[in-house]
Image (spheres, helix red, strand yellow):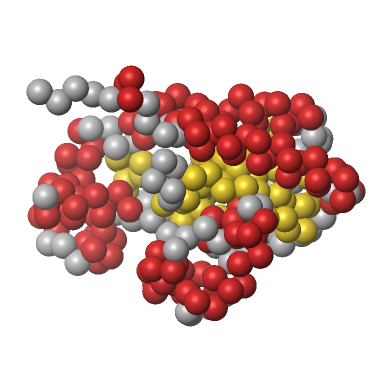
Length: 254
């Protein structure tokens, strides 16, 4: 298991800020013996998770694309949320986006676009800011104090956000959002764009993500936002209920 975790750290090196890695760079970044890195890279290459690029090094391989396709047709948040998102973009001049919260990140896993054309800061597969935006605010507002403190203590969170250091302070700041059950922001991530989000809660009462409607400010009137919030809350209630396991589909343990 320890060896497997070490090998997975090779994959974690690949980020949008650095797409290619040589073996020597991996050795320097991870502190593993060169022979170990070669062994891990060989195994990942054989599985299609990495490919060799002559004169460059290694980058992510085609198996990642294959897994992405499988994710899009199997992730319950996408499967449950997509029909509602398609209706939202028909009803409002907006983007509809589904986010997952994992490993102290807010990640857009699916988006649907309406007829209105505008620039959004949210891109599928790219982690979003934790300290700004409705999608992040509504997730953080529904984390308990222990989980919030773990997030705030994470080195990546501290270096990439302006969140307070104490969970109690952050909970106090977000108490209004938790009470309302939704978050609305105006131009926090993209100038001229408003975001409205509701939390997605699983059957264990844990927040697992958020559903967001993003639209140009010119459409974000009080009456329009009231309708958006009502629709989002309805969608979230159905998704949250559907995330609960059914007794009829529980596996039999013999």
